[in-house]
Image (cartoon, rainbow, N blue to C red):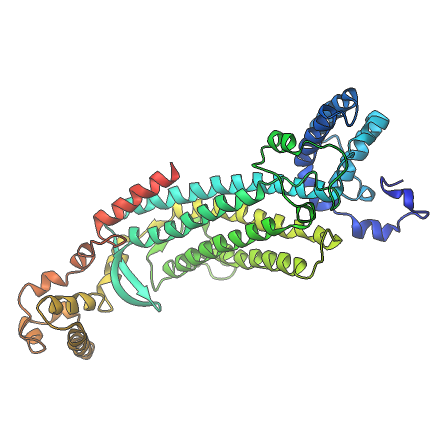
Amino acid sequence: MKLWGGRFSKATDALVDDFNSSIRFDARMYKQDITGSMAHAEMLGRQGIIPSADAELIVKTLAEILEDIEAGKVEFLIDAEDIHMNIETILTERIGDAGKKLHTGRSRNDQVALDLRMYLRDEVDEILAMLKNTMKTVLDISEKNIDTIMPGYTHLQKAQPVTAAHHFMAYFQMFSRDLERLADCRKRINVMPLGSGALAGTTYPLDREFVAEKLGFSGETRNSMDGVSDRDFAIELASVLSILMMHLSRFCEELVLWSSHEFSFVEMDDSYSTGSSIMPQKKNPDVAELIRGKSGRVYGDLTTLLTMMKGLPLAYNKDMQEDKEAIFDAVDTVKLCLPVFTNMIATMKIREEKMAHGATGGFTNATDLADYLVKKGVPFRSSHAIVGRMVAKAVEKECALDEFTIEEMREFSELIEEDIYQAIAIKTCVDDRNVIGGPAHCQVASEIANGRKILD
């Protein structure tokens, strides 16, 4: 008979048992469920709500059940519905009536919310560690390529010269924001709902503060109805993970482009590439493509959670059982992608000569030529027009701006002198952008140092 079966005269249909059960996916929270129950039982004994001897026996037996689960000696049952009922059933089978006292002063509603918060808190800690490792790898790559000049793009058209380090450090900034969001999200996960009961709390003199402290929570939920019906913390985490996956996807998109023959800026290591079943020459950036593809999966998890919650009245509704598969999948996907992504970029070869050659085409020094004239006293808009005409002429002649003779340049402006060639040299274009956030060597070096401080 089910633990809640007193009200019912008929057994649940087998199809309903299978449909209603969540043990297939919530079994992963066994450790959090047992840890939470141990703290709850200890509190019940301390408060005199149940006999101390029973509380001690419950705590001892739950610890034994945890060991047995981790040793593979426990088989969970579908008809026990979920991890919470499975563990309580096992406990009652082992110690009889004393086990039936564990659920005093709590509901599955606040128990589920507790377990999910504890589980996600642990998962966030793991993702934070993974993300920091990714960020460290980006810093290492940037440090090695602090003087590797490459073209910067807007609209996927060559725009201005930068360095590979400056480009990679843009992603470090994105990941830094992800790190902040994850840490901030963790604060709202780390609030304890146990003691909310089904929705209206309990008449028992629970010591919620004791349980919260015992389980490492920063505080307790302040409204019992919100305590059991809130899934904002899961939705927020899915949102943060979606943004993180978007950043990984953007990075991967560039690596896919850069590893093409047309760019040839990077070459993926053989261990992070695949071949073709029919074309023997192929070396495909499948790892980057798959990470890019998996971003949509995490977006779908976020949409699932938002859609599930949008029409629910207070307080708990069975719809909310659907929260776990979505948020678990989002967490699992990110944890799968981050280490693979990190190793992929750590092992890729950066082709410096190809990047440098790419920076010389596309008139990437045109803005610097315009700035040269501005510094000579020409209004910027006038300077912009002059250089635009020079570029048009260079396109016609199929030459670069610095391939004009000084006489040809002076046809466009008599203010141009011999120092123009140094002013529009690609290295000068990078080094002279010595402002905070710019690509100059000293600025990027400073940001790399700041990045290491963030990680420390």
